[in-house]
Amino acid sequence: MFSVALILLLAAGSCVYGVDLIQPDSMIVQPGQSLTITCQVSGYSVTRYATVWVRQREGNPLEWINIIWSDGTTTNNDALKNKFSLSRDTSAQTVTITGQNLQPEDTAVYYCAH
Image (tube, rainbow, N blue to C red; front, top):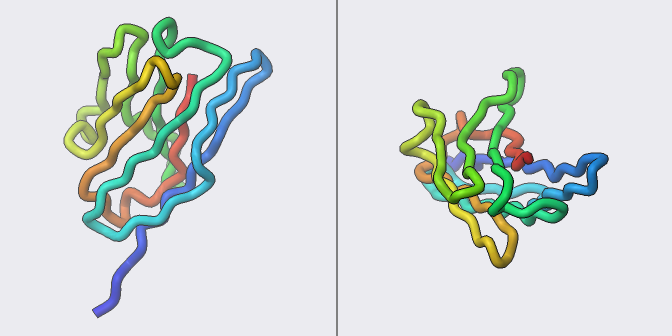
């Protein structure tokens, strides 16, 4: 029996308006495990603007996962709502995505975006 590693590549972004979104470079989890990725936000307040998580699987377009609005409510992609959830820490200016029971098909580049 062999184990297959699920590789999640993460991309940190920055834009010309002084907004920085910082997250880890990469993470590896085993199938069936959970994963937590935290995005450190600077240049805007998470209580004034929304933050979205998207992913891009190899050979596929960007796929929207979920968004956390300025008031803290979330909207989820219905196809992924039982797999991913969002939370935020307003004092630390972070937005965190948690994935449950990840599978090889969840291997992707994950982005937090403003």
